[in-house]
Image (cartoon, rainbow, N blue to C red; front, side, top):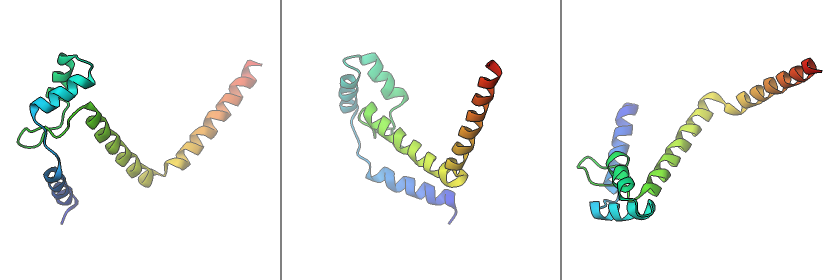
Amino acid sequence: MSTILKQQKKHQVETKSQKIYSYEQVLKSSISYFKGDELAATTWMNKYAVKNNTGEFVELSPDDMHKRMAKEFGRIEADYKLKYNLKWQRKISFTIWTRKRRLNRRKSL
């Protein structure tokens, strides 16, 4: 089975186990999050809240969105660390930066 099909199948399984929220529940929670600002709450609901294939809300508030984004950023960073060995690159970048800094100090004297 190809990687793309595995990812799609995994995504389908995840969406089945997700909790569904009604429009009223999401609106109430979002208004509370935005401290009474209904325009901000409805804007978040229409633009950024995740919905399933049938249009039902999967996220209750922007807090859920932030958790989802943090989880995804962590997954991507872990993937890059495995592919590119970022610790090694940081050491080289820091060494180059300190050498340039020393040269600039000597030039200014």
